Length: 380
Ligand code: GLA
Image 1 (cartoon, helix red, strand yellow):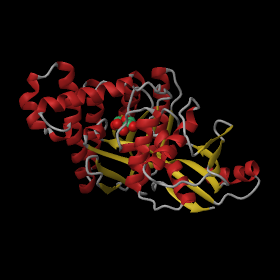
Image 2 (cartoon, protein in one colour; image 1 turned 180 degrees about the vertical axis):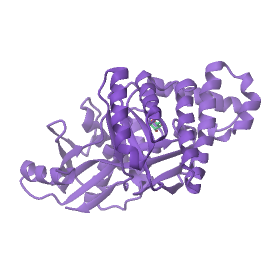
Image 3 (cartoon, helix red, strand yellow; image 1 turned 45 degrees about the vertical axis):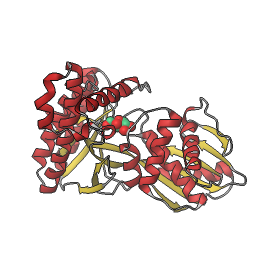
Image 4 (cartoon, protein in one colour; image 1 turned 90 degrees about the vertical axis):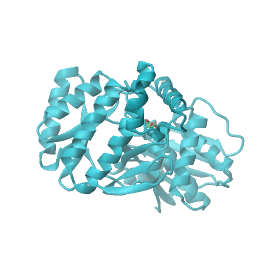
């Protein structure tokens, strides 16, 4: 059963009545441009055909009541006097309610049933999908306009200020503004989004290592601080403002670890722009090589990969039909992504599954994904 049907049916049995609307917000896979968003740089993610779904109807009083099918738990909160507490999944919804109200939106209460097929902690942005689905739910019952960029910024603010993870804008923006059949080249300073059509005959394959990154954001925050330190050294607002030539001319003045962190970000911005050009020209070979180079840079210079991600990327590259592969998302576990000749995708998946299992003794989860549309709401 698809998830839309699942939340619709569950709503009827849990809330004794029909839902008024269905909202959906997708997870994402980032094709290239990793750890560049918080440096005001460039990213090229696509929204995927895995989403958070909510079936809901407006409720009496200013209260939100949600039944999570995945946690088999019902919880609720009042829109007045919001307080943080420990209940994990509900905090994302409360955080979104808090930022929307802080931004001046008048919110109505609702009751709903929620489920998701975006794996948690896998680097596919399950939290951004939950934030944007929540924003969509509030928009649908409260009747304000849906402005994807504004909602993405508020979702990011909820993550930064309520959940306490200091993430950039990529995940929320692609979940809000994704375009079916396309990746988006996003300028994370201006938030300009350029749709880049995915080439015919090429499959985007998600390679889940079956390892999960802990929610410890200290390594992530440490990378951010290192980047900010180097930006100060160059006298610019963010590393986005340093080009490869300027970096090379002065890199000898930097301490080794700072030099490597900055080299990753600066060359990754360059690779991302080149990847968008390669897509425009239909040069898939060049695109694949840029993905490979991105992985090496994340592994050696930025040091956010791990043994399982490296093993997965190696297995992918050894398999027939692979055009390029890299870890995707924040790193430290989760998923890699590969571009694969479509006609060989099935055999590719079988061979990578067998070889990865042999290499690390974990069962991976490998699937071809489609580029989906961003968050939407429709009458049930
Ligand atoms: C996480 C963050 C994003 C981005 C990536 C790394 O997904 O939420 O903002 O920084 O890591 O590219």
